[in-house]
Image (cartoon, rainbow, N blue to C red; front, side):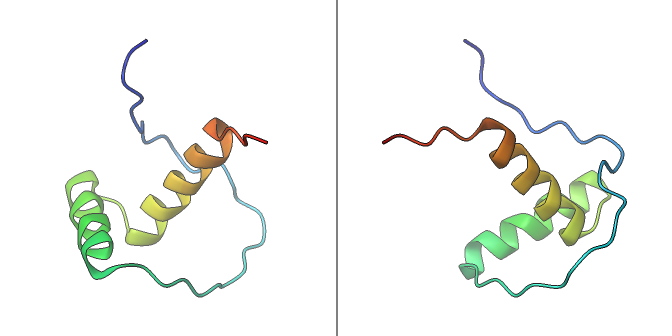
Length: 62
């Protein structure tokens, strides 16, 4: 099976949004900013895409 990639598509969610707060390690935030700049997207867009990807591909083991 091939390596999973994050493919950036147009925004999927267009409904109402809410502001949340999240703590991230400094190096992770720097990596998010690097990816956002390279993709020509905002940090917020990259975080939303990453969370959407995680939710769609997450496996919860019991």
